[in-house]
Image (tube, rainbow, N blue to C red; front, side, top):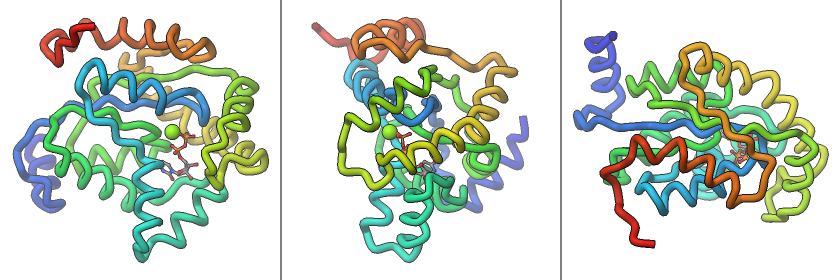
Amino acid sequence: MGTVVDAANKEANGSSSGKKFAVVFVLGGPGSGKGTQCANIVQQYGYTHLSAGDLLRAELNSGSENGTMIQNMIKEGKIVPSEVTVKLLQKAMEESGNDKFLIDGFPRNEENRAAFEAVTGIEPQFVLFFDCPEEEMEKRLLGRNLGREDDNIETIRKRFKVFLESSLPVVQYYENKGKVRKIDAAKPVEEVFVAVKAVFAPINVEVKGLCC
Ligand code: UDP
Ligand code: MG
């Protein structure tokens, strides 16, 4: 669908390498375990993990002209304009040398979703959705102390609100397309990974045979 337009978009945005990328969007509230489980998936199935939040933090630390804007958005738990995030994701994909990606914490709203699709022409294979109650996520975020400026109760509450209002509708959009694989993320890490493996194993038979 829309291949001519997609090709034109790719040309215009400098991603015309012709390489076909497989993308899984990994969504879930803040503290639902996206980053932790993505690390496990990378180990086992050879995807490249791209955390949109990490890319934005790296961008702001690099002294980019957008740095102050990004910092303010993150501090307020708001969503950075798609133009910035999509560009960072696209660059990271092209530079990775890999062709399969876990895109973690993105798309966070309808604007993100539409922009990514329009610019890259990529539709996700599926959406891995970590479903976790807010109390559990709050406990994890307050306990993890990664020194992140947004892991304080005030910003956490704002992030929950943005997740409910802006990000869950994206999950719903993909749910309507039959693309959501929902995981009960309130359990211990190992148990959650058992459920995650059940999603990835059938479609990744040929990748990275791990011995143990
Ligand atoms: N963020 C954003 N767009 C994205 C991803 C992240 O604007 O596509 C910003 C947003 O302010 C968010 C913050 O970065 O609250 C932290 O995101 P991250 O995914 O690192 O948080 P997590 O959900 O993993 O706790
Ligand atoms: Mg994260």
